[in-house]
Amino acid sequence: LDIHQTPSELIRKPGDSAELVCRHGETNYRVMLWYQQSAGQRNLSLIGHLNYQTSNIESAFKQDFSISGDLSGETTKNASLLVHLKDPESSGVYYCAARLARQHTPSATHNKNPNLASSVVPTAPGGPDSSSRAGRAEQQQSKPVLQASNPKRSTVGSPGETVTLTCSHDDDAVFYLFWYRLRKFGEPLVLVGYVYAEIINTEPQFEHRFVLSGNAKGKINLMIGNLSVEDSGVYYCCSKLHDGAKCPLPCTKTPIVLNGAL
Image 1: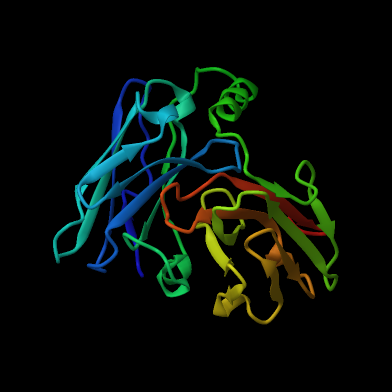
Image 2: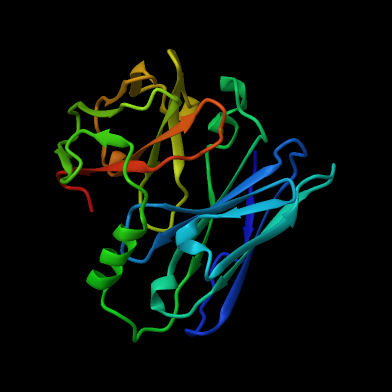
């Protein structure tokens, strides 16, 4: 699934508005989701989604964000995100993703959508400092459902070594766990693989050195062998309920830093 998002970059002043458009050609992918990655932050926050013609905005974003579009036809799918940039806190990278309207089998998961398209939207400086922004962004997040191994500090390794990341939860309604990699701020978020119940799927580009194990009903591991500099980045573990009613749930993140990596 190829997703196209325009424009790729916008510069606006506080008080302006910005409209981002996301489109793809798969007629059966009738849900589009929008995420925000605030400037200086590595976590992603779900802004909301469009399901056919119905939009849903997360409570933390309802005041300054709106989503519109029509995904019900048999033509190219388009959805728009309108952002009211009232202050520099709105600066960041905005991602869109697409999925099927209902996801009950592994064939209908993010496997067909390994990349999220993105737009960079910086605003003029002059607002609160980055520490204040980070504090408020943290308060907007839902109570975490997932727990990551070593969540508060980076995992540091050397080229050639092996590292294992662990993600666990205690929610009986969760049937899917996904691992994503973000190499650099502003680059696409790439799906490494996922576990559906006990069924494991690893994306082809990661099959050689990345091994997933475990059960989505409790805990999964991501083992990365023969580390290289290109493996440096932030690894996100995300969960999804079986019926998709609250998809996606909060994500955890674990940075991996290799000795000698830039």
